[in-house]
Figure: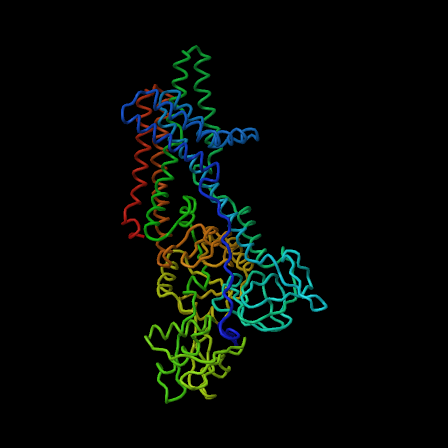
Amino acid sequence: MPGTAERSSPVVTSAPAAPRLAPPARTRLFALPEMRWAAAALGLFLAGLALQLAGAPEWSWWALYLACYATGGWEPGLAGLQALREKTLDVDLLMVLAAIGAAAIGEITDGALLIVIFATSGALEALATARTEDSVRGLLSLAPETATVVTAGGVEQVRPAAKLEIGDEVLIRPGERIPADGTVLSGSSDVDQATITGEPLPVDVTTGSEVFAGTLNGTGSLRVWVGRRAEDSVVARIAALVEQAGQTKARTQLFIEKVEQRYSIGMVIATVALFAIPLLLGSDLRESLLRAMTFMIVASPCAVVLATMPPLLAAIANAGRHGVLVKSAVVMEHLGTTTKVAFDKTGTLTRGTPEVAEVRVLDPAFSREDLLRLAAAAERPSEHPLATAVVRAAERAELTLPPAEGFAALPGRGVTARVDGHHVEIGAAPEDFEVAAGSTAVLVRRDGEPVGLLAITDRPRPEAAEAVAATRALTGDPVLLTGDSAAGASEIAAHVGITDVRAGLLPERKLDEVEAMRSAGHRVAFVGDGINDAPALATAHAGVAMGGAASDLTLRTADAIIVRDDLHALPAVIELSRRARRVVTANLVIAGTFIAVLVTWDLVGHLPLPLGVAGHEGSTILVALNGLRLLHPRAWKAS
């Protein structure tokens, strides 16, 4: 890792391949009953609409629409009745009643469309919840199921990792995952801790070093003293934090949901009064019912629902075409309210893979190409990430590598090999060899004499500085939250233009920092890519994942995913969200005006049903078309 004094490599020729973890069981799209009911309702609606437009007998498409009512409306209707038992009147029940009212006066198409909208919304919410639960289970599967315990008598026993006790001594062989949090008793190795800290390079560990469950041992054998039970390990705490954040994070609702109680109660009372009072005063039953149903149609919030959803869904579609997957309309709404952006470092502001940043020749007899060829030839048999970076640099320079003989490596000391008849050693450079902050210095020796120095680092993304500047213009000064060292974090922060740097953070500390910013009144968007970022992503108002190399849990937990790994998309989608919010506001004014005029007309005069339906449908179409303007490519370019 940046700033470490040692590095390790395979013991003899190559380390055992790391075990491939089976992906967590994923809830299939139609495994959920909500998805099946919503799909059935949509299919029935489309079939009924096709028959209606084709001029088929009225009974045929009415039958299909009624079946759509039954399949898509029973769940929200039941939910609304259950809420009513708890003395709460919600929009679910109101929408079902409005749909029934529409059917009662012959406008069944309108009602069926309303049913489909609500059934689909509920199904997507259920799917998102199930996928998050899948990811948490997948995270817990990072830790191995069994561990090799060394007894007091030196006997090795295989036990379930979940039953390890504090004080047990476990043996971890090369390529195995560490079964429990603990302290190294003996041995040395390199451990990939990216799942916990997010650091791009393996960490050299030796006697006294702390290790974490679920991290991957590299090339040496370790004996570890178990310091925590399985349920208390860092990886288990990450899973718990994600689950807790999902349960306690306030469910921010769209505008209509925020006022649903008052609107629902007011509409129901008004509808009942408009039917009952004239009837008590001697009016005709059919006339009173028709007037009340007309009121329910013109007062129903269809236009308000469409005033909100089409702009946000159009913005989602536009963002998707430009490489940003926004998971819901609520998320799109949240992005536009962001007042503080927090970035992870490794894999977010940086590429996430080590690269040779400097080749420094120490022997005048060598050129840069000679030094790189020599180092890459010796490193080629190694599977260490630093070795991979050296070989990759030589390949980019199109260098032909001579064969290496007698390759060997010792954990923490580096590699040796014979290249062109010379003994080559590559290992950690002494501290008096200075390189750029945040870089790992590798010294190359030939026949015992130092001939060159390689500086290896995790480079910033080329667009990071511009993207950070554009983000600052929209939301103010961003912050860097990372598990990496302070030196490495400060180097990257200076390069991209971030002044607020908080380094050395384990997952719960990242979460604490996000919560502190929220408590200070900020609406936080957190941008990350690793498993260790999942709790912060879940806690932020909007969690944004870099999709290129993000973990499964991160992609499931995040509210939005930058699929193409282009940070320019972050300020663009924030600005697009703000534009969508402006369109939503305009649409709500339009919809509210139409509803107010039509309701007033129906209350103080006599609103003909055809005119009421025309006004209601006209306002619905108007706001829908206004919202769909955000599908145009210029909407993204303007952002």
